[in-house]
Image 1 (tube, rainbow, N blue to C red):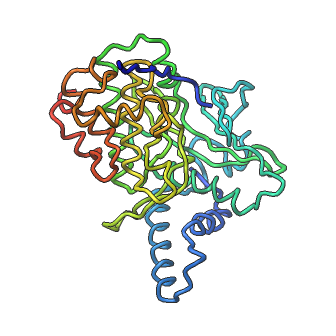
Image 2 (cartoon, rainbow, N blue to C red):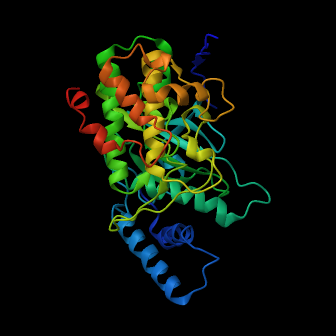
Length: 350
């Protein structure tokens, strides 16, 4: 019986902290490393030192100043950055993205949802502070620049992150337009790998890579954005990594290990998602709807992969085809790393 492939089209899926609040944000960020089940005093002491060392490392990257550059002193509220444009340029479960403009400067503003009525304040603030602390510590040409964390209004119920604005839109829009040339696709792909290499070198995994989270800045520079699901899997000065947990991401881009009810290594999750994104950029669709056995195409991929005969990959040249098989290895421990990808001869020619 001839096997049929149902091609899956790509769908839309839905720095400066006030000086008086620095200790508060540090405490919130530290709390996420607490282990309530571990009551061994020596272990707790080691954990506390680990937490403190990590925060010192992370916060040393944040250039806290009493006066944010260019703008008025003590930028407590979003209004200090200008006038909010009443037009959404992005929307998700936890936040919306709008623009704010002042004189000739335009910024993107990620406005978080209000705290739910029965939601603990500590848990709500922890999620916000975690995203800001991670994203604002990242300085790389292929990472979105996070500038500030401020209140939206004076009733203290809404908070937002101020970021650089990328006027060229996102990768999803470019894919849908269908006008990208092969050299352009390869360039964006290498930029994605370069940004991920920087993240992973710092022990940070994104965990929600998809075309909508890849923004296009000036001079066609790709920027990885939205660190709401990011996880620190290794402290900068440590050699070993820790397992991540929790189901996060967008289904077509999620690695198979995420769907299992156990811990997983976070860096390989990004490699898998980057492979799916590369396929999307080439063919305006995903190779399978979900990396689960109940998907119509994924079991076929598992069966065809050892012989590298999965039909949707056959239109690729040999080098990118083998690269994709290496990135989409269902065994996360055998999946190729970002560094090894960047060392591949084909990637180095881009």
